[in-house]
Length: 463
Image 1 (cartoon, rainbow, N blue to C red):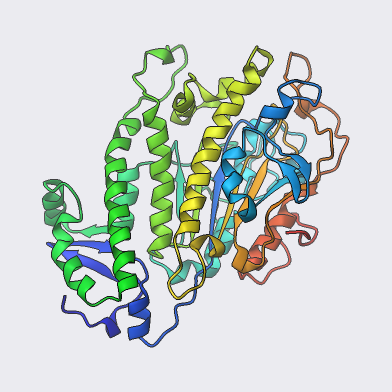
Image 2 (cartoon, rainbow, N blue to C red):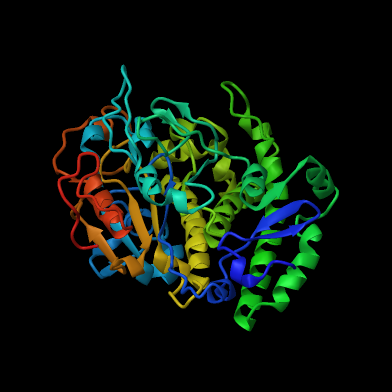
């Protein structure tokens, strides 16, 4: 390795045979440049469609399979939907009683578009959106990284108005298409190569094969702590490459079509689980290399359209969207809850990875400098109120966790739909807090000087 450490910037690459692999920020680089690395602030949002299980209190399934915890404040108990997050209890806050005012009387399938915008996108007719929360933050930090933001979804592209395949919208309200191919995301983030290098790489088992000599040279110049960090990072990259290869099978699954027997599709439980883990892992590596500080991932599209409807195969069911309709059947709440538990497991795996990874310079774990939002724009069967929300991480930004901020009361709307008026069509009996109030607080803690976002009425206390 010919480059002296003093001239290496935070976005250094390992190089070999025309291939380049982004490196994480290392303490040795900062010391050589006489700098104390400042921990960057990061934000990621994850969206799940179709709402969550909300059996009524008198239903025997309520104790185990109601998505929202039992209790409030610091005194709460997770149900089986969320108990995979118990090890992260002190690092997260569950919230209820929040929604966007412009969507409260609209069918829940129309609202993924405005989950991060709060715009009045409406149920039909003229469509106009506004900037999303992630892009507002990216406008302030995006010029400090190789990529201003990472926009991902399981279905890819932009989708349609009120049927978005993306959570991210620019300042003009235009949808930013999401990427869904893990190999393309991996190459974009970590491998820079010309055509000849790409062909050499294709003949190699791993992008790391061409970089071993440079990695060995670099390792000799690093502290013991950085050597460990580099080794762990390279192992993570190789593990992710293996998952990316497995995820190719998922990408080749044909999209659902009307009148097609979905049961004939050759999908194993491993396919959706590995795919989801790979997408989370790519965000982790993007944050670790400081390639971006902003990411969104729409886990599924509303209304059971797209390849994301197959995610329920991970836990033994046919199609995801049907689970929300079949809660009236015996075992229906449990089935829907098992799918939500699967999502909790994978979100928890990602957050735990951030918690286990230290920031260079002794600024705590990455999770303390990374704010995560996980949720949906509907709760009980198409109901566009009382959004299920989890806020995690960001302790170094002042967030106080280990609590359930229950603003929905003891008896929120719920129960199985057995025909007639759906919950979203029923009269509003309790006013939710504008979700944009939480967004203002999040932006402020992320370092954005603002007191307004969408239809906010002020910052949120208690977080």
